[in-house]
Structures are given as C-alpha cells and as structure tokens.
Length: 422
Picture (tube, one colour):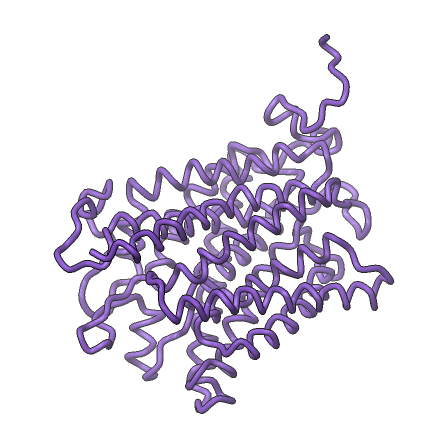
C-alpha cells in the first residue's frame, strides 16, 4: 500500500467535505436574513442524510465493479453496509475505504447544490425526502455511469459505466469527465431546474427584489468552495502525480479568469463590479473546469474560464425572461457551466479535441453524456418533487415565506441583535 497516495486521497476527501459547509455560507449569504438558517440547514441536512445512505447502499450502487459494460442500474450486494470494502487487497495503492470516503463527499455536495434553486420557500422535511430519493435513484446510478471503471494491466478499460466504457466501445472514445461535470454539476443543475418549476416563483419575484443579505458570507463561502475544489479536482487523480498537478493548476487558472470575466460583464451591464459577482464568477469557473481539469493545457483553461464567467453572468438573468425562479442561480452557474466545461473538451481536449488533433468524435460523445444526464436527472427530479408537492407539500405557505421561514421551520433566527428574553 502506498501511504503517500493514501494520505493524498484522505486529505482530498477532507477538502471536498469542507465544500458543503462552504456552500452553506455561500448560499446563506445570498438569501434574505430571515431565511439564512433554513438555507444553510438544507446543506447540513444533505450532509447528514447522504453520508448515512452512502454507507448503507450508495457506494454499492455507484461502484458495483463487474466486468465489461456495467448495467445502468446495478448493485454490488457484497458492499451493502461497506462489508466488502473493509479489507485492503494485496498490492492495492490505497485502502478501498479511502476511496469510499472520497466519493462520499462528492455525493453529499451534489445533493446540497440543488437546494439553492428553492431558497426561501421550501419545507425542510420535504427537502430531506426529496434529497434521499433523488440521491438513490439519480445520483448513485449516474455516478456509476461516470466514475465506476477499472483498468486492465495494459491500461485499457476492463469494465465501466456506459458513459466511459460503453461510449468507448461504440465510438472508440469515451466521454471525458475527470471530476464530475456531468455527474455533479449537470446532474444537480438539471434537478434544480425541475424543482424551481415545481415549487414556482417566490412571492413578488422580479429582478432586483431579492438581494443578498450578507455578501461577506458569500465571499467566505466561495473561498471555502475554491479551497475544497483542489481536493475535488486534483484528488480525482487518486494519486499525487503530474496529472494531479495539472488539475491543481487549472483549478487556479480557470476560476481566476472566470472571476475577471464576470466582473467585466457586470461593469459593462450594470456599471459596477460587485463582490457577489466576483464570488459567483469564481464558482462558475470552478464548475466549468471540473470535467476538463486534467485534459486541458493551462492556457486553454484560462480561455474556458473567460467564456464560463461571461456566459454564466449573462445566463443567470435568463430566469427573469423565461419565467422560472431559480433562487440562487444553480441553473445559470452549475447547469450552464457544467455544459460548457463538458462540451468544451470536444474542441480543446489534449489529443482528441476537434482543434487539437481530433475529428469531432470527442465532441459527439461529450454531448451524448451531457444531455443524457441532463434529461435523466430533470425528468426524475420533476417527478419526485411533483409527487411530494401533491402529497405532503413541498412549498411553505405564502405568509410564512413573507415572514421568513427560519422561525417557522427551525424555531431559530439567524441574527438576534437584542435579547428580548433577558
């Protein structure tokens, strides 16, 4: 066992786990003051619930092993409760449980991302039910499609999900998604769009009405997310090597460029660059570079960041024109950014991109992977949310939304400036 790689993987897992509290701060600062507890609790609720489900059966669904093309929905019954992952095989580079821990943090943050679309108006209990069902029938299988693969001694695929091994068998190239552009960002963004449509618009929804109550929280959250993202991207190499170093550098380059591009768009459009824009631009760049971080030269990572920052800055305003209330721009940043990063590889992936020696096949398989995950996630998320809304209800009463749902849902307030009980 390689203790260096084991340490690298465990540290990366800790980095990624920190992203969920970071997301709670990022989202919490963006909502109104009377909803900050509710918003942050949806991230922490996802952390608790998905952490438990992952140990019980999530890992067994996401990584069923097998030989050849793994079925789109398979379960490794030996790993229910992680019983099959407790011992380290001879010659393994790291203990299986280190990989289990690393991938658990991906599942947690993916579910938490969705919550931003329904800020200020969702019942906590209904959110938790949705999160558990969506993770079970959407995220865990999609993670298997993307991340579950093994290599033969000659470096070729021995088995894997259809997005990697299956597409390679048909087209000669599998889709590239190094750290989760499809499985995490497109997946979460599509589900966020579905929830926004089911729950409907907030009371008084229009541009300029709902403003971030705490931009310092937003900046703090973005900083924690960026810090954790180094574990997310570089850690996905599962080894401390040159590929991890490339992913690390690109995780600096792309979001830095995206931050600048977002600020330029704000300056031209609104006359002033904002702190929330800087934070949002950085996150947009992080989203876009996620699938591409190990397959781009750093200069092309900068170009991707510039494109993602500018396009996502424009995309977040489309909700007002199209009439859906994606409260915290999960669609505009994660769905749009995830699509950009995934499809960009079809043009600029080292060796296989259309402009770097390829023939268009890489772009084709990237598009198949991206839109397959988008459609699968959207349809099931819409169905789950619709059933919850029609049975126990997903949205709070309008009067509770106007008053602020922290006290209604959790009996707490985010800011108590005067102790009325003293």
